[in-house]
Every structure is written in C-alpha cells, then in structure tokens.
Image (cartoon, rainbow, N blue to C red; front, side):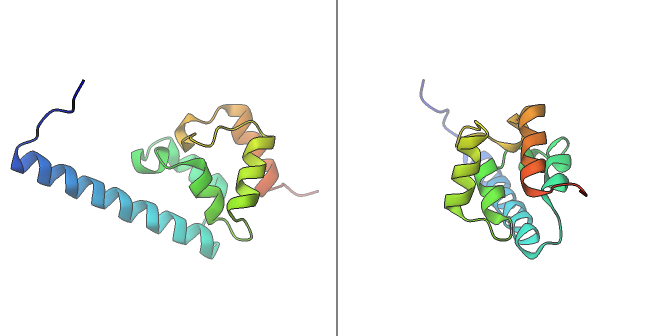
Amino acid sequence: MPLPELDADARRQALEKAAEARKVRAELKQQLKAGEIGLAEVLRRAGHDEVVGKTKVSAVLESLPRVGKVRARKVMERLDISPSRRVRGLGGNQREKLLNEFEPGPA
C-alpha cells in the first residue's frame, strides 16, 4: 500500500513535527551524555512523552556516559532486547534489568 500523497500544507506540518522530534531527541541524548538525567528518568518520561517513547533503546544507551555502540549492543543482546526496540516498548523485566545494569542501587 503506497503512502498517501500530502498536500503542501500537510507536508510542511509533517516536516516541522519531524524536526521538532529530532531536536527533542538530541536534547535528551545530550542530557544523558552530560549526566544531567539518568536512565530511570528516560524510562519515566517515556510513559507520557511520545518522542522519548519512540526513541530507540540503543540510542539511549549509547548516550550514557562510558557506554558506546559495542557495550550497548552487548548489553541488549545479553538482556534479550531487540536492536530495533523503542523505549516505550520495553517490558517491565527489561526495564528492571536495564536499571540494574546502568543504575545499580546502593549496596
């Protein structure tokens, strides 16, 4: 089924919405990289923020300090999280395992 043709106004609105989503994702990743927010905050936001919820888990993990593509991929494989999984699509067990991995509680 082909995508519907958009008129000029609808196309402009879609492009603006996409640009805004990219901006929000970039800000989120910068906040993670700087340590201003943690993984728990991202998971909390995913419940009510559509852009955060649609962000790939791999992109979020790669934005954490001291986590790169390789470590993120290995952790996701070990925790049985699909490379295409979005934050909102994580199950309860997957969320808990990610938090234990990257934000362990006090010993």
